[in-house]
Amino acid sequence: MNMRALAARVLCVGFDGAAPDEVPREALRELAPGGLVLFARNVSSVERTERVVDAARAASGAAFVAIDQEGGSVARLRDDVVEIPAMMALGATGDRRLAWRAGRRIARDLRRIGVDLDFAPVLDLAVEPRNTVIGTRSFGSDPRRVGTLAAAFARGLRCGGVAATAKHFPGHGATAVDSHLALPTIEIDRATLYERELVPFRMCVADGIEAVMVGHLAVPALDAERPASISPVAVTQILRGEFGFGGAVFTDCIEMKAIARTIGSAPAAVAALAAGVDCIVVSHHLEVAAAIVEEIVRALDDGRLSPARLEEAASRLSGFGGTAAQDGPEDASIGIEIARRAVCVKRGSIALDARAVTIISFEGTIEGTIGDGVGDPRPERASLNEALRRRGVKSEIMRVPLEPDPGDVRLLLGIVEALGERRLVIVTRRADLYPGQRAAVEALLAARPHAIVVSAREPYDAALFEGAGALACIYGDQAVSFEGLAEVMVPRVR
Image (cartoon, rainbow, N blue to C red; front, top):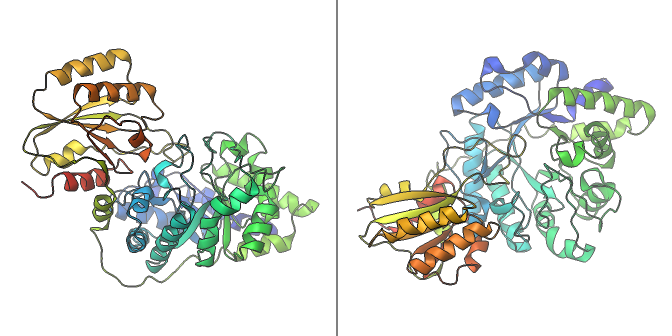
């Protein structure tokens, strides 16, 4: 294989097209990347997506196909599959067996469309309340608990015939900056990193995880000059040397603004490979991927990169395809089981009686939903209202902005006053970050102290509303999480 062809084999690229005839076959054939990565723009039904994958793979000759299928808000494949709650819901259960089953079920669905590698699980810790880009994607804040559950999830994927990826090394949790938009800096000392952020990665490496994704993160305690994704200290010295990782190392998308607007995508790709990374992820533009190939060839010519390093990187990417899946039960109920067991009643009782219910739901565009850039096109907003109605509850819903203004709150209080004996359920979303939402909930509780408060995203809202007589956390606002909550609130169908 010539050096230009070898340079292309260390790329994993995204492409446009949600139908086989929309796949850019000629561009993929000319580029011949080593891997393909699917996004929401490629995915519809299982049958159609399988044909898209087949077309793209045939054109490119790619050795593997990857996807971000974490569960919760980051799940590219949604139609005709079992919905898995966010990993924070799994973390709330603390059950390794559930985590293993979740991974196996996700793998079962991914194999149906020809995926070999899942860019999951997330090993970032939930240690910064303002970090909305990770949020409920994290298993939690305890490093060993995260490592234990993530390793079980990865084993489940492997059992289902799909390789797993630990991300985002060395940990994206301790920052409020989204690397899609700017370069985050992790301002913690080296001892804290080793005692906290790095623990889940070390555990998953020891457990045999197949791949690690390195984040575009400035971590001065590890490398004062270079982001982790292009740092030989982070990749070669720590991940390879200290942790003994022998699998494939991926960058996060090299087109993220953290890199593209600082170092530049093509120079950073070369620097990442020189640092010990094996695969450059180019999520969006095939022309950027082609430019990176040319930059790699130039780097081989001028000595910035050695042929041996490129050959080593390419060799690590050949083992993902064709992983054998073990037989097992379909496990179609795993999503709802996780969601139900994740419901954490912090105060009072959330059981509903025969009275009619009004749900006040604070909602809108939730920042930090990862997809084709920063946000996936999300399905129609799921609601507790629908889940309760399916269980025979007379329920209605009032949708309120995430950050209501004083006029919204006055109107809301006037409506609530006229509700009579209806039970009130208040669904919050990141009220800790929205002062108007917090004020609105406090005013509602002053008027209706027996209302039930449900924190639908991260659990930080739970500490805000001490006046709530009943309060629960569900760690995700997808349909499956509301179904699990409804099962707890209404244990039997009426």
